[in-house]
Image 1 (cartoon, rainbow, N blue to C red):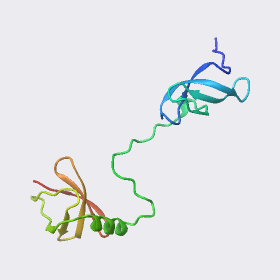
Image 2: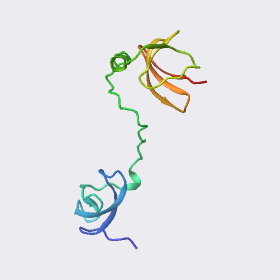
Image 3: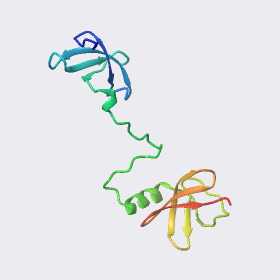
Image 4: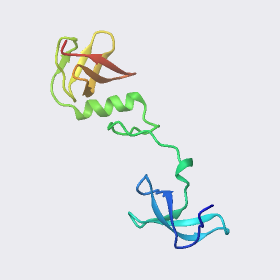
Length: 137
């Protein structure tokens, strides 16, 4: 026995605004059996019906700022150097660094600490590449 779909009935749809499969009210039908538009009961957004079983989950952002595809590593390095303050420190895995520090690496040259994570790792933007280095060992 199949459930009837019609205008005014409740249906589960993927909400574009909430980014979740939620209860929606059918607003219009494309055909007698095909749902057209729906309104989310949570946020009141009206949009095209999306079958939640056919929507792929997107990866969650890691919290780092988004970089433009057109940004080169050299541009990122220049931007980071212009924002950072303080003296340049020689790099050593035994030294402690914080975000924004300028370091001088014997192999990669000058770089800026973009972020610290896992307690003992830093992401450093060098002129031609981005590296993950150890610190506080």
